Image (cartoon, rainbow, N blue to C red; front, side, top):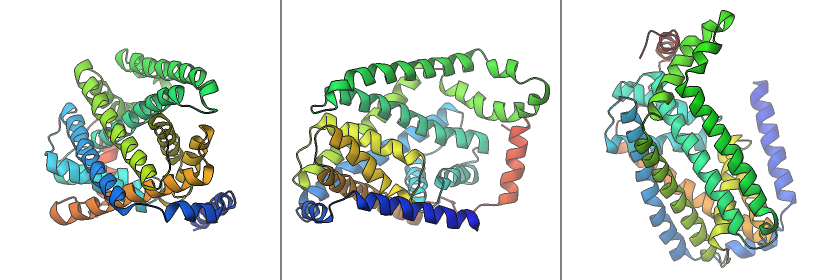
Length: 330
């Protein structure tokens, strides 16, 4: 109870602070100029990204040895992400993995790795694309965009390379000795599927290509939304703003990251010379549009597909997880 009260207090404090940074009249002036037709076009363009997210999860599940139909995979992706808008701490991802276990018999360890693999792909591709866009963006950010791009790209390359070496050489087996051997089951449950996912360069390239298309669509939707509000923002700047806004969602301080998402994205756009209040309006409109589409698709998926997110047997989950982490499950 105390944690919930503290969480609500933090969320309210964050939203109040964000509100103090805004010129509400300027914000409202930009929002009322929105073109409904352009926003409708942006919503339609956004739809294929959910097909791509479902296809990516289906392909990842296949790489791990599990068969999931494309229609069911799309439904699970939309429902899982919709639940993340409602539930705290990305609990929708856990229910997504649970639904995969209940409907398709995917073991919890592999199911969770499959969902998290998509998140990692999003993080890597979006970060690289956003930083590359920063190096092309006009305005004040262009002064140090190249330096940031090289520094962060080098760091990401080092982290990814180190992780691949860790997987390929099975360094975890050598490190888990003595008291740490009790973690071997958990290590195997999470690392073994990761090794499978990175074993084929071709499949890995397909996953990265799919993810790049997803974020290209996300950027297009944000760009069209800006145009719908009468705000002219170059595509590279939009992509940089989308990157920063989505990275702010890693630690969700407010429900569905409302407020923090907009503030982070608007601050990034302001670095490139966009008016902060106009930028906040753009980020708010595109955030509402994307979450609205997600909610409609997720609700429809629950009606037409059997996505058993509500069928959570906690004792069965705990037993299956203990079995998996003990190295007895698959």
